[in-house]
Length: 440
Ligand SMILES: [Ca+2]
Ligand SMILES: [Ca+2]
Ligand SMILES: [Ca+2]
Ligand SMILES: [Ca+2]
Picture 1 (cartoon, rainbow, N blue to C red):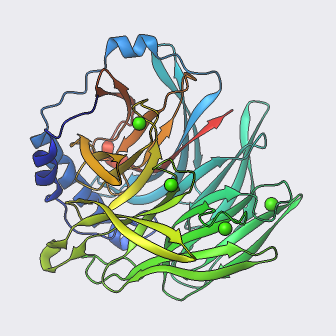
Picture 2 (picture 1 turned 60 degrees about the horizontal axis):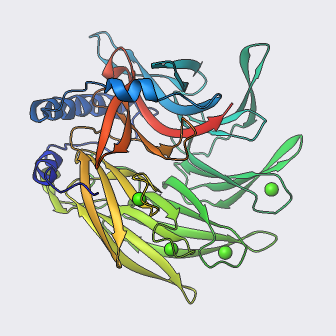
C-alpha cells in the first residue's frame, strides 16, 4: 500500500546542493541575478543525479478526462533577458489557466505588466478571479466578458518602504455577512490586512504593521472551534542572502465580532517560517496548524539545523508544539494536505527547495515521511492537491521550477505516477509562485 523509503538517501544528498539567496526575487532587482543563477545551479544538480525520465504514461493520458470547466490557476513571475541574454530582468505577472483536454492540457494566459509577479490567484465564486501582484502591489478582480479577460483594481497600496508586495491571500467570510473577505500578507512594512467585500467597494483594514518586516503567508482556520475565524500570518525579518539569523514566527488574529485580537503563536530569534498550513490531517475533527521552520544556517550556507515541519495544536487557549519531521534542506515553502492515496486518511505534503517532494502519513500519533520525487525543486516549488477529472480522488500538482515544468502525480497501484502537463519554453524565464483550482 505504501511506498518504501528507497529514495531517502538520494533526497538527503540532493538537499545539500542548495546555495544562497533570500528567494524573493521578482520585485527585487539586485537579487535577481543571484536567484536565477542559483536556480540554474540547482537544476544542473538535479539533472545530474536523476535517472528518472519524464515519460508520460499513455494509460494515464487516455484515462484522464477533465471535468468541464475545472481549471488550475497557476501564477508566476516572468523574466526578460538582459544584454547577455540571461533571464534576470523582472518583467510581468502572469496567470496561466490550465484545463485537461483530450490527451493533453490546454492553457489560457493573462499577462499583466503593472506588477512584475502574480503571487496567487483565487476564484471568487461566480464573480471571476482575484489576483495579488507585487511591485506594484495590486489586488485585481478579473472577469471574462465577450471572450476577453479584463480587470478591476480593488486595492493598490504603497506601504512606505522599499517594496510593495501583496505576497499571499486567503478567503473567508470573517464578519459573517454572507460575502467572502480576503486576509492578505504583504512586504515590507509588516502589513497584514483584511479586505471586506462591501458590495461595490472593498473596505481594507490593517490588522498589523511593523517597519522592515516581511509577511509571507496567510492561513485561516478555527482552531479553538468557537465559530470565530483566525488569521495566521508569518512575519519575519527581511530575507538575507545567506539566511543567517533571520528571525520570525507565527502571529494569530482572531475575529471578535468587530475586529481582530492579536496574539503570538511562536517566535524564533535565529530562524523563521515562511509556510503555514491549517488542516485537520489527523482526522479528529479539529484543525491543526503546520509550519515549515526554515533551517538554522551557519556560515557559507552550511545547515546547522535542517528544515523542521512543526505542528501546533491549540489546547486550553495555548499552543502546544510538536515536530512532525526534519527535511535536510535550507527551506520548504509549500505544505498542503489531503487524501492523495485514496485510503480515507489525509496525507501532509511538503515541497522543499532542493530535497524533493515529500508525502507524510499520520498514524498512531506519529508521521512517517517519504520522498516521492527527489529531482523536482525550486525556490517556491508550488504544490497543490486538486481533483481535476471529478472522480473524487485528489491528484497532486507540483511546479518544478528547476525544470520549468508542472507535473501531475496520481497514486496508483502503490506508487505515484507522474507526468509533465505543462512546460515553458525556457525554464529560467519564469518562477511559479502558487497553484489553486477553479471551476470556470
Ligand atoms: Ca464578509
Ligand atoms: Ca476561533
Ligand atoms: Ca486534527
Ligand atoms: Ca491517504
